[in-house]
Every structure is written in C-alpha cells, then in structure tokens.
Image (cartoon, rainbow, N blue to C red; front, side, top):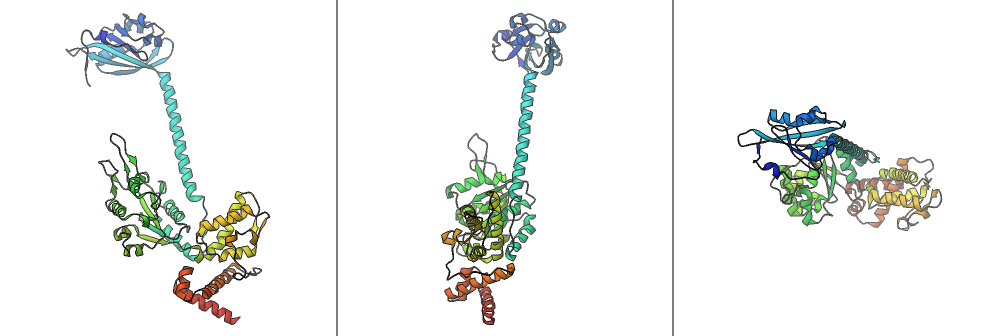
Length: 458
C-alpha cells in the first residue's frame, strides 16, 4: 500500500475539523492531537485526551481495543469495531504515517458510531426492499399488460393471423404486421412479445409517424454528453425485450439507411459516444400501407424490407370480419355495462345495423360507438334512437331482419347478402366492388353468384 510520511512539525499541521472524530498518536501511543468532538464518543473532553496513553485508556476501559498498537504492529491500515465505556460500539479506522526511515511515527484514527451505520444499513435495506417491491410491481403490471385483454377472434382470417403469431413468437425473428388503423396491430405485437423468450424484458413502442425526423435517430440510439453517462435510446431501453416500430413505412429514407446498418451489424453507437452497444432487442414493425408497393415506388428500401419482413402477418379490417363484429358488439357491451355499473341490452334492429356499417376506424371505432350508447341511453334497452346520427342507416338502405329462430351463421349470411346486393347496385364492376369491400375480385364473383342464385330460387 502507499506509505504516508509526516515531517517533524506535521502534528501542528493537522487541521481541526468540526464534524469528524480524528485522533493523532505517536509511536509510543501518546495522544498528540484530537479534534474538538473526539472525546464525545468516550465521554471525555477532547482537551483531556491530549497527552494520555492509549494503553492506559484501554486498561481503564475507556475503549477496547486500542487501535494504535494494532497499526504499529501491522504497519498498515486497520479497521476494528471498538467498545466504549458507555456500552456503545464504534467503527474505528487507524492509518500509519511513516518517517523517512520507514518507521511508523504517527497513527491517525477516525471513527463512526456503529449505531449510525446500522441506521444507514437499515435504510439501505428498506431501499432494497422498496426496489424489489417496485420490480415485482413492474413485472406484475407487465404481465397484466399482456394478459388482461381478452382476444375476440371469430373470423377464420383473424384466427389464422394469431395462429401465425403464436407459431413464430418463440423464434427470435423480425415480424411485420400489416393492417389498417385500429385492426389490432399493437395488440398482436404484444401477444408475440408475451409468448416469446423475451417476455420478461421490456416492450417498447416507437411511432415513426409522430416523432420528428430530426430527433428520431437520437431517440433510437441515445446520446452521451461530454463527461456524462450515456442516456439510453429506445434500442438500449428495449434491451432483452422487444422494440415495436409502428408505421415503419413513415420512416425517412436516410433513417431507413441508418436502421439497415444497425440491424445488419447488430450494434449501434449513441451520439457523442465512442463505444458501440450491442443490439439485443427483437424488432416488430407495423404498417398500414403495402410495403411491396413502397419498395417499387422507392419510398422504402428493399434492403430494409427484406431484413424486417421475415414473417409478414396480415390483419384484415372489420368490414371483412363480420363474425368478429358480432362478437365484439357483445364483448364491448358487457365490458362497458360492467365498467359503468349498469344493465344494458341492444335491440335486434340496432345489432343488425351495427353489422352493416363499414367501421373504417375498425375495432377502436366500434368500441367508441358501443361505449357512447351505453353511456347516453336512458333506459336499459338500447334502440335505434340511441345510435349516433352518423351511424344510423336510412330505411331505404336497411330492412329489419327477423332474428327469431335464426342462428348466428344465418344472420351473418343475411347481412353479407344485403351488403353484396347493395354494392352491386352502386358500383359498375366487380373490381370496384372488391376495392370498396376490401376483398378480392374472385371473392366478389363467387358471392354474387351465390346470392343472386339464392334470390332467383326464392
């Protein structure tokens, strides 16, 4: 260890301190200097310690053991618990100071009341406990985040999408979720994360459409100011978990180039930092547009497309999932009657009208309308007059169904038939109908054949 040396006049150079217990003894164990508060630990005035021998004080039971003899013997720093006459315990540290011949000339000791240290220790234990509880709460909330929400999946296409998601969840590959706004892309991404090997890690979202272009890269990689620790970006915060890049198609081309480099090299460099950090986060992306068309139009890099689009999953809009609309109506009705502690039911006519609407806002729009009706309707029965005006279908567009004795598949078929027949009257070609209805042109042809045949048979 480093050796400390005092000149012959060093004792006079030891400065008085007002808040520390410091005692200086010579090689004979005689106390040469004591700070103002030194005697408080032993019930003696500091002035009365000067000139006393630590050996004598130890014999008198003022303290035990004396630290000076131990330091003289070992010729190095010594730390001990010291008992005092009053019964308290002190943590005392003794340090040797050597002359130029290498002999110990003086010993400087300083002490702390162990009871104070125990208080600090108890405080640290409380902090550790609070931190562990906070971590448990975070884990609990994280589990709730992914398990509280029920999934309503009646349509075959939705079931296929979630089946694909579950199948690839355990594979640490990039996924792109396609679908209109409100179709459940975020929900699906969370489900993949929950079922993955990274489920105990964070799930971090970044909407590429909302963060300013000038700030987005820094938001991703983080930064470090001179002399300061690194401020983590979202790639660092998502370490061990999942980073969900919403609206990936809205990412500027020069930022797409940066992301390609990060994904290929599996590392990134925060701004102002000389050190690279490893990329240890799974990337799930979502888009409302057709990425293949964006690649063709050169608004999306083909290289990034191939890196991210390992597993594409398509979520169809509600207008193509009448079975899901039916189930979601019942689900949201129950959800909001429980939330607002009320009893509500909807008439068959309202149910049928809801099935025929386009729901351009998809699940969130349907949720919003059901909540509005539950809150605003006066009685227990929600009728057509409780539908928001913009969602009411005129009489010439809607004929009330007879639900009595009908099964759900029969009801849904009636609704689909009415939608197809109405579209046939409005649009000239099956291609136009397919575009408006969001289904393929061959599907339109098959359904037209099916329902026009049904009408001719009646």
